[in-house]
Image (cartoon, rainbow, N blue to C red; front, side):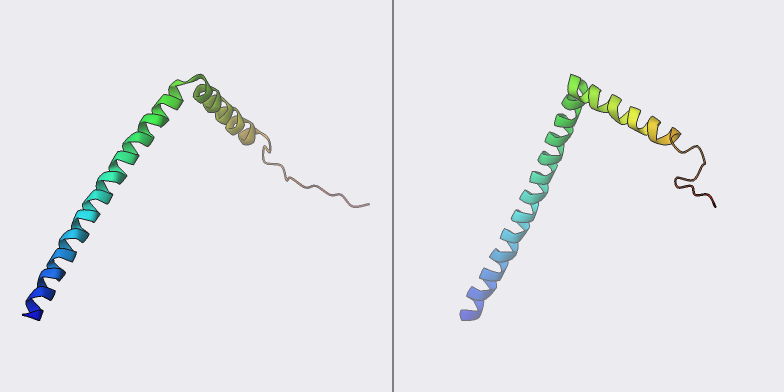
Length: 77
């Protein structure tokens, strides 16, 4: 009879573990949706537009700074 109880306990542990896994998956999905909403709200805000403009300006500036010349130059003499 001791073996039957341990079998039931094992089945219960597996069921609980599966429930916890499903709850974790659902929680991750809800967190991802919330993060997506926050990102969309930020992009619509003035701060989001300013950040996007700043990133574009930085990218444009870094693309044009070198123009194929070496960063460090030295000369003899």
